[in-house]
Length: 130
Image 1 (spheres, rainbow, N blue to C red):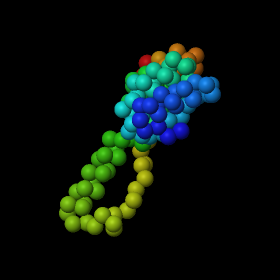
Image 2: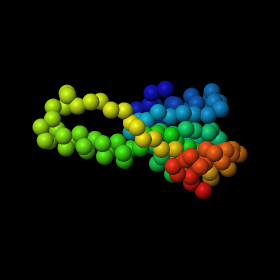
Image 3: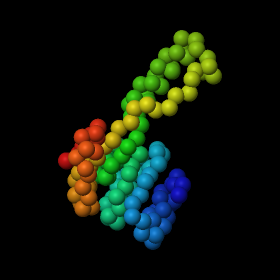
């Protein structure tokens, strides 16, 4: 479901509530990041385990995220800007995919949902919120 406005978000909440899914996976979208408080509160209210596209959403109470490291992406983008300012032609620069990902887990949210994570996964997490 594509959501780009507050009214669409409210409609999505209604649709999700009526379909009673076992969980949610959100994809990266700046609108969703801006509305993270509403989204996290909805998932919490409806007891929906949710995988988020941004660690910020987990730090705000969401369950977990596995996503590219945005600070790393921004640093890499700065190197492209530097190359362009030094004369490189943008069309000749390679397209890169993220190569650093971060796993963030919120154990408080997990406990509220009655979920546990294996110790092996917790050890691999880049950040565990307790």
